[in-house]
Length: 159
Image: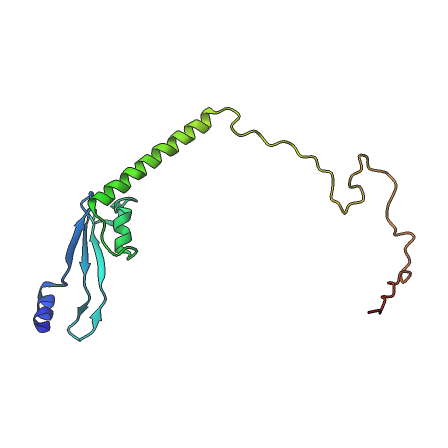
């Protein structure tokens, strides 16, 4: 039986099973795992025969997302026509809701208030933090500091 199947594959080509057709006319096929004449096995594949045979004629959305998920192996079973039509209806409803929401936000005046100006008061480590006026007197200790004049206190060793 295997020899007959191999002979038919060589003469007629690969055996492929028609799984379904979408609303655009694309045909989807399943090619099961097969043995070649040398005894090697080819893995199972899923393919599509597009209506637009030329690559430059392809546009986004020519293959429904449900069928694309089946081809890529993201779903086990091929989609049904009812499922595709139901999902298409949901997408259309979502587009309408988004359109209505964008029109509502354009019609509402003051829907988003402009941000208020913030006052910069400085950082907490700055010497002018919290003061209303900045003094002209220098606050640096650079003139009175002498190196080695400070020594850390002794820690108590009591326990």
